[in-house]
Length: 347
Ligand code: NAP
Image (cartoon, rainbow, N blue to C red; front, top):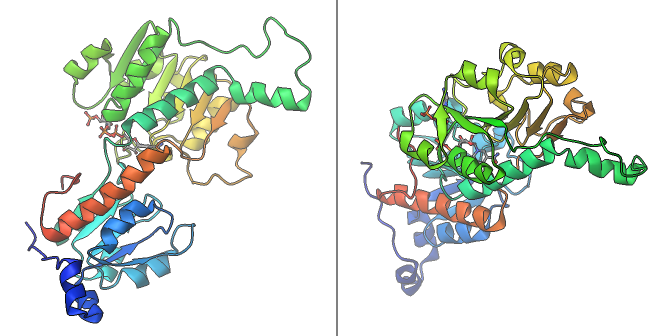
């Protein structure tokens, strides 16, 4: 356990009327986004000296490195790479890195562990929002909603036609979940009412109890890629899952396979995906996450009809994002006080 920092309640300092003393005794927190919900920042401001990057683009690295120096805690987002260089620049007083996301592959957690820095994240709170968005993306992709919508505006809609804009329904299909954690299980639960023939899942460790609730069968990666009509990617990005959806994997997929990725862009070899979509090796893809983000406007994927791309909005539900902001703040306050965090990455 790190040493406890005592937080002087604001009202005592107000009595003393010594703002300077209050400021200097408060822990210092750097927030890399000005646009996180203020309810989280308010929690921090009551007890900490908070400084914030002031533009709604990710903080430039040189600015982050300059601003993190001397801070006790860092409130960051998935757009910030928190590595050895940043931790070195922060200094040995840094006690906590808290990210407003459930994914934490942007943080070098081993470096944090070495230095006794606690890492906070925001699991659970965003599970329903992300599962809901995944379903929306799946349905937009398999029923070609964006492609069809364009026809309304560009004159392509001439009349009702029996085989025009037909997609591939979920009913009777085989759905493979790559990752079956918090979000994967909620996605599967939302797929069940669409009456798939079977849901399978691929993970490192079996999840028999959770699988039983949606009647899912555990399969290995090869079986999942070879047999699925839909593959839903909802795993963590790790060295093992990085670009696991490779040329080889796409070659094994059925020509009617639809790939949905709401995990991280890095799980998919994007060039291989482009080739698979262009050559109709697979039917379509729906992506909420890409490499890089944002996707450059000249990216070849944007020229294809059989891909739906969203700008990483999985958890972008108002109440969810507000609560994510508060959890991140509470994680910092707890870490600074040496208390249990709302959600701490096990290092
Ligand atoms: P989680 O509960 O930790 O689930 C992660 C899943 O990935 C687990 O089932 C895990 O199973 C599986 N996994 C990890 N390594 C694997 C491997 N090598 N092979 C197969 N499966 C593997 O996390 P979560 O809350 O569901 O979130 C999942 C991911 O979604 C996050 O890490 C984040 O990147 C992404 N996400 C995206 C958005 C968005 O806006 N699009 C929003 C929220 C989250 P085992 O450990 O048993 O292998």
